Length: 428
Image (cartoon, rainbow, N blue to C red; front, side):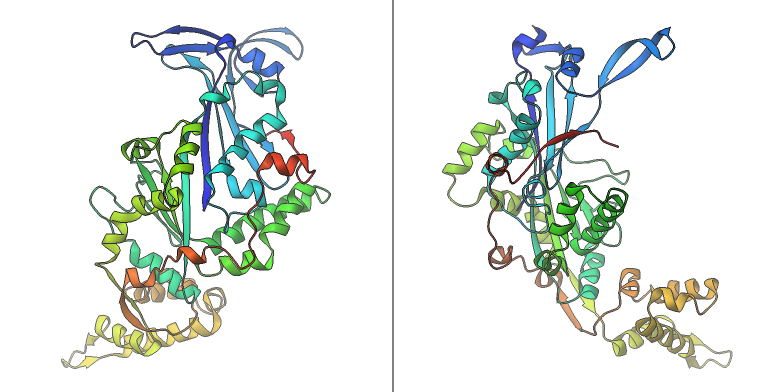
């Protein structure tokens, strides 16, 4: 599936105060006042003087991120006004499948649908679009995503935990990872550490529920907003909810350096021509190339899924103590196992309310020497195996869509058939 795509579109030469730099590359500056006249949001960098109450003389104009709302999701865009080192352009980015169908739990990997980003800008802002040179649009990021499904939530959480120690060569797992997500190619501060790719492994169910919660809150404040209602209808549909359950997502954020290294053009038109002539699925091929080193590393790692009885055995190994007479006692291990069974029966929050906070977290800390915290917070099932991680991650490319899935039309078709509407709105 194609998720987020980022496209840079330069301005037409006649709108730019331009010249050539020392390397004969075109550079220049766009007049942001003209962009503002054609519908773009522009902010003042500095107030020079007050002309009258409420009216100021300003300077240092700058562009802010803005968004275009379709019926299902939104497209973000920003003007990069140019300088002595680069030519001005507009950057547009958005989730292709979210824009076309309201969610990205599953969706199309048809590269031709990327043009929907361009169509959204052209349809929503025709006057501003006249300033842009779409024939020289460049693809700057392409997120390729495929899913595996675990047997249950507990197993999926354990897979995430087991993969935190996996790395390969220069592709290191990020310290920015958390209980339901792992990153490779990102620094601990959340910045990309690779110019080629960023890899993300995460549980889609948790992300989807968070998105639904956010949109629901917005919808409650604006109950007549059809925009939010469409998104909620798409995200809460039975097919979407069912597909998201226990779904482990493997996302590869592909950057231009990687595409160029593979001999793939980044010019949008040339890229689409390349895809048309490619023998096979370009998106699937890019994804496999990006994940290859990590999946090779997965093949050499094992993970253990414990039954209740096995957890007791592990606790007895870790928490056996010696009495003053030199005898081995397992009382602490058995007490912790009882705590584990209580948590399995009552759940994290309810059990926490029944005992002191200090004792609860002390026992949790001791349990975490055997059982990951994420598993404790999401106890389900009693499966047991010691298996290579790679066997727990079954990416079946033939099962990436529910039965009966129909690929969405591009945005222009939806628009002209009155199945989509556009309204420029400001980012809150």
